[in-house]
Image (cartoon, rainbow, N blue to C red):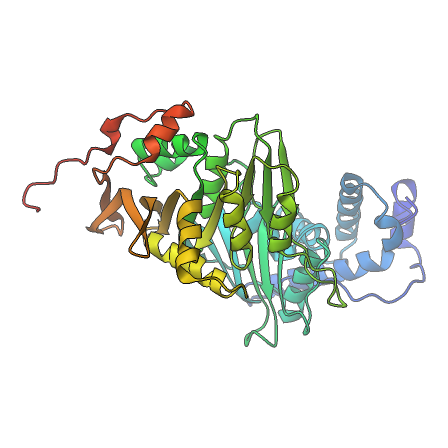
Length: 465
């Protein structure tokens, strides 16, 4: 290989005179986790090998190699450089150092072991020496850390540059995604007081199914049957909940019941949806370039997608003026469309929509605004992540129209919370309210009948009114 005089010439090149090239700052590596002599020596070995590797590599030719071949060659180079080290290393230490250096060069440094752990759903870097992860809804402090704030900033730049975005003092906040689809948010100084912050929402390779949610206690089989019928019956759905409540997960699951004969267009800020249908068109917003030009907003994409002959429009999350165009699409022949919103209750979700419309700059009377919402949406699903880490559907409500200038809703299913047990698990049960929803007939017409029995409320426990 020309970039490292590799293969047959590698031994000679590594041991011979160093090629003349521009000085390059060595890649940072995580410092020793404990202040003992052995860890300090291993840390110094790692820094020396990194420095030597960068001096021997021809980065211009390295970039032209296939990804797998590049990784293979770098592993071999690291292995040979470790063999030349004067510091005695056992097999376990050699393997550990090789792995950590490979992560630095080919991946995201100290974050790589976390990204390889399928049990982690969120990675939260509060500062270079404090990293939390979320497992099964609960936060845990890890021993992962970066060398310093500059090291963390280099990893952030590596992430955002791969998707054509930038982060600096003029653009100190950025949304991006990793190659596997994981969502990334980063914010740096001067907006942060303790250095760079990084949040990674992991992308689930195996998409959860409705049965998985039932097994985890997020909802019941009866609610699951109702959700299937809602998707098949082409009802317009608004999924509401807080951060990490499972809105996108449920949106993915509901979309799985859309017939394969329909054309679906998705619109997102950062691509997260995992639709399995064949006929899907995916759109994503674009941030402004370094000159502040070229931005494409969700509203522009929603407007444009209406000219693309969609059967259903799915917006990952409404958060601004695009809500007007989304509601218009729902009310003008694009039935079965879906979106999500951040809100703490089903009624609050509708108030959020009203606020977005009011702040969009379009003058519209309150009554007309509420009529638009009530005529466009059919169902609001409220999700909550409880203190035990379980994400639950706490309300499934149907919008029935307007009454005295107020949008009228009726709960179909709710979660009755009853307390917390000694292990910290939330106690409660899912119950039907006894209201037969108006959309039952529509679902039957679309081939998804719902038995009346699932809407019958269970008997109240003795001693309760």
